[in-house]
Structure formats: structure tokens, C-alpha cells
Image (cartoon, rainbow, N blue to C red; front, side, top):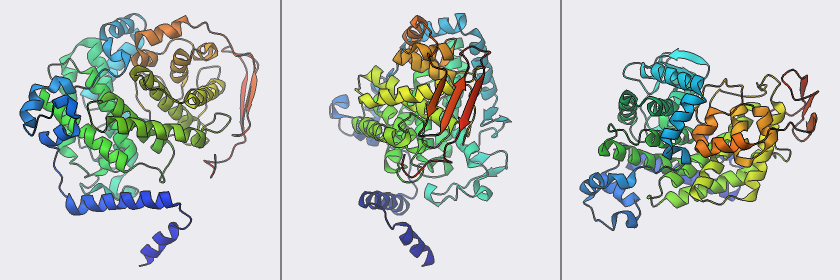
Length: 477
């Protein structure tokens, strides 16, 4: 009874909308526990019902045969221009980014051997086969209970959950896909199929730590969508395997939509989840829910801009790392929107420009950026081999997209990340920009309390950054 009273006290002052949303989430959890305690994978008939009628012409319930015969219709489309430019990207990687090419392949080889570098930890081993619920630094493996019943904040139960989650974002699959493009080695495709199949087997729907956080599902879905495109032409991707992944992507989208972090960690958790929905909606237009996911993701990302980014363009949690994180979210949003013909509100470009202006100013003469505030080393996607405190790849990609010569001046040489996200045309846009240093040498981000001064814009210039800002995010941004 005491616990119930505490919960009731927490509800004081909550808006009607928040109470409604929380009640809906609690009912959904209860329904999962009572009515679907041992959910199995979606059937072929279930997937057929998720598709637009125009895709299958109302083909009744003969779904297994239909889907197996027409799987090519449901492959994830090339939703970014780079995915249709394998030969061009391979050539550019060999000629212009040879060091990065070597680094990507070397990382892929370590991944192939079951060795992972995550969140500053190196050479982590999760077992063979991989234990997807393991946390190797504490030697713990979390239980396979319904996700809502896992005490994931208790290190005695999960160890450092972020290490487990980082592996299960499956960003390493994108590295394998890049290496596959660069080498043509089918071994990488075999590993991709094996690892994804293993994950699906070991993580039944709604059970285990890897269903706890909607942000983690979102990042995993993004990694899977990228990987499916990178391995799209491999003979290892059978129809049945692709069907299985598509079913999982639908389940991921449904879960994210049901458990958005509107009131718990409504920061990069919420915007990251929204970006995942936007990715799913753009990449899987055959789904009935694609438009709704795309629109919901865009609405949240648009609504959160004035909440999470102050008027001076600084991310509200006073963290340079999460500021960069946020800039990456909106760069991907802009790239996806341009590729799919989605019109974005003018405010998105304006705020993205402010976010990138801040990154320009905090970049030190040596190219690194100071780590102020919270950071965990996570990334939206890992497409290159830069140090975690080097944000110039984000700045370079922004320069190519928004055509800002001063950003190019600070970003310097073209970034391999720009090539993989924007394709050869995006790289050409960057090349065609004439770099010019910013005219000013001092700036005040007064609302956030950051002041930057320098005596020039060369690699030998003096530089000072003063932080007089508040600690953490304020109640109002």
C-alpha cells in the first residue's frame, strides 16, 4: 500500500495527456503479461496483414507461399543515395580514404573473431556463440523475463547494462556491411546472417534486457536497415532470412511506438526513438503503418527542437557529447527527408544550423573538442574510425548538406562518414565548397553560459572556452 501511495503522489501535477499516456503504456504492459506471456515470432500471415493491400493485391491467407515467391518486393529499398553507389563508394574508398578503408576492414576482422570495442572498453568477449544478455566486465547475464520485470537499474542483476545494450545496438553489423562492400568477401555476409539469426533466437519477443529500452530498439532497427542494404546483393540473404528480419523490424517499430520516452528521459532517448520510427517509415513504405511511423517520428523531432535546443543553439543538457549526438540525429533526418521527398519544417534547418555553429566554435585548433558534461561514448552510427572527441565528421557532413564554407574550413579534409551517408554526390558537394574562416574570433552562447575566444583559425591559434552554464537540463529550455 505504501508503494501505491508513493506512486499516487508522483502523479500530482501531471497533465491529463501525461496521465493518459502513462495509463496506456501500463495497460499495454499488463496485456503483454496476461494475454501474450510467451509470444512467438510473427507468422507469415501476420506479416501479410501488416502490408498495404496494394502490395499483395488482397492475396488472402496463402501468405507463406506468396511471401516466399515475392520477397524481392519487400526488400528494404535503397532509402539513401549511397546504397545505390557500391562501385563508386568502393573506388573512392580505395583512392581517397585508403587509411579509413584499412581501418574498417581491420575492425570487421576483429568483429568476425568475436572481439568488440565498446564504450571505451577494448577486446570484449561475449562468448561463442554470443550471449546477447551478457555483461562481460561483471560476468553477469540478465534474466530472460518479460522486459518490464527486469530490474535493469540494479547492477547486481545486469552489471553495466550499457555495455550489454551497446553490443545489442548491432552497429558492428554496419561495419561488416562496409567491409563486404569494400572486399566482396561473402564471409562477412555469413557472419551477418548468423549473428542476426542468433539474436532473434536468443531474444524472444518482449523478453529480456534487449526489449527494455525503446532507444536501444530504435538504434538496432537503424543498424538492421543499413545492414540489409549493405548486404542486399549477397546470396547468403535467403528469402526466409529476410522475412524473419522484416517481421522483427515490424515488432521493433510497434514496441517503440508503444513505449516512447515522452516522460522518462525525454531527451536524446525520445529524439532517438523518433528517428528510428522515421527511418522505419521511410525504409519500409510497403507497411500499412509506414506513413504513421514516419509522421510520428517527424512530429516528435520537430516538437523537441525548441525544447531540447536553446535559443542560442546549444543542447539543453549542457553536454558537448550529447550536443553532437543531437546534431547527428537531425543530419540523418535531413538526409532521409531529402532522399525520400519529405518536406521538413523550416525550423529544422535553422536549428540544425545553430547546432553545427556551436560544434564549429568548440572545435579546438588541433581538431578535437572538449568533453563537457555527460557522455557515454555511444554513437548513432559508426561509419569511420575517428576518435570520440573529434566531431569534424559531423561538421563536414553538415557543410555538404547546408553548403556552409566556414564549417568546411574547420572540418578540414573530407570525411569518410560524409561519403557513406550522402554518397558520391554529397562528397562532391563538400569538395566544391570554398573553405573560408569565420570572420569573428569570439562568440557568446549566453543562454547556455558558454563563451569561446581565439586569436585566429589556424592550427596554432590560441583558444579558450569558458563554461558558466547550469548543471544539467533546466525545467524549461
